[in-house]
Amino acid sequence: MRTGARPRPRSLTPALALLLGVLAPVPALAAVLHVSGRIEDGRARLDPVLLLDREPPPAPKPGPLTLRILDSSGAVLTSVPFAAGAAYAAEEGGCRRLDGLLSLTVSLADAAADRMAEIQVLRGDRTLGVRRSTAWQPSKVAGEAQRPAPVAAGREPRAVALGGGRVRLTWDPATHPQVVLKDPDGGIAGFLRGGSAELDTDRRTLDLDLLDGLRRLAWRVEVE
Image (cartoon, one colour):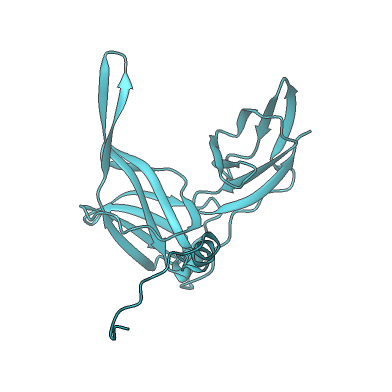
């Protein structure tokens, strides 16, 4: 027998390979903020943001803009430099370039996620745009925890069957300017605005995320 010979690795059985895959480290979920919008005429028009729990994304590419997150007292929780992007929109006769598009996803520390009351987009020292919750109130106390805007009594979302696999969904857009329609598996099926939308669905319940500008409130509505 030869001494010092290295043992040859044995191939994994399918069962062992599956077990090792199950035991492999899974990236921890984190609070993640997605900001979108567009800069036009020197102003940033910001959509209601999405605050999600998912794997931490890579840091955005640095640029001349800054995303600043504040608490209700105006204290800065975090600042992130980034750059605006561009896209092309297909139109009759060709494509049109759209500049100044805002789309960035950043991880938040737990403290920032809990206390976030306002986001700002700046270029240098100039504030281009601000987004707050519709429930925002200023505070003299730094670090107050924030909650989603509640649904007012009598203003609850309502879903009515129209027949033919159509449902009309209505809600209060002054409190929740955007609604996320969830699919049965919990994924995003669509973004709705304006306080009213007609949906192609035969579902008897609708799962929603009501967005108040900065936060989301999970809501389930029965189709009447």
